[in-house]
Length: 348
Image (spheres, rainbow, N blue to C red):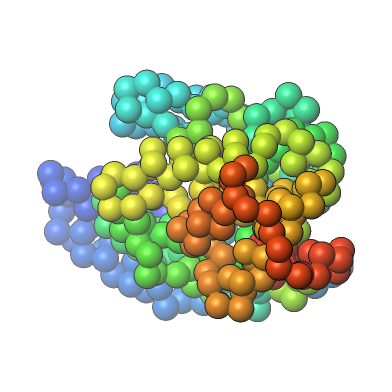
């Protein structure tokens, strides 16, 4: 075996490192050496970097050889497919809970980048008017490997963007400091954080949300200095598709279904849905609901509360129940005040 073979072929790499592997000691040693060398070599040296006019770095298109990985690897029957056309990537499928399944994902080829100059990802997407509301995980992989199912593999982190039925072009911002990882198996890792300078590749995943999904990515870029990161759909039809209670229920279902006893594997899917629900409450035509939501956000901000923490978000949403007393606190409810608080909610 050669260094090029073991480092460039993930399947071969995992086979060599498997406990039952009959591969030679030389192959195992070569793999470990090449992995260590890769960690300290220049990041993204050969990656074609495309700079957008606003200074952000376009990560895709081009969409590099995406491949599907669904829950059939563990006996499930969920389906998905990726289609690339006219520099757009369509990811669609159907999530089923049969046979203890519940996820569909797609991953691109390695495209190492140093994103240390940026603060987050901005995804541009479209969907269809018939699409269901979904929180889609945007996954980023580091060059630092970890042991997980299948052997050595790049460490992964995920944040989520909310897709609502609309034919209009939408954007969703995901700050790097909100990406969360796992231990490589079925435990969340609440302490680890994504290292932007070590970005290796990207992926998409829909987890534990029953039914069909359909999203078309127009562009994905790394950005910094973003001032207004409120999803445009909040101002359009996003809050008309489901009630605040329905967004909250979907979020709780996702968190419960993805919890194998030590916490949700993908907490940001639930967080994104609850953040969206709070934003809808702020923008509500019902003055009491809007004032209550603004009050909760302002109090959380003063207390330095984590607006990406599911327990904090759930507590705020619980205050918006129909039998809650009417808000009496004087609060600035001007459009500028709402924009400021919602921008903090979405991470900018």
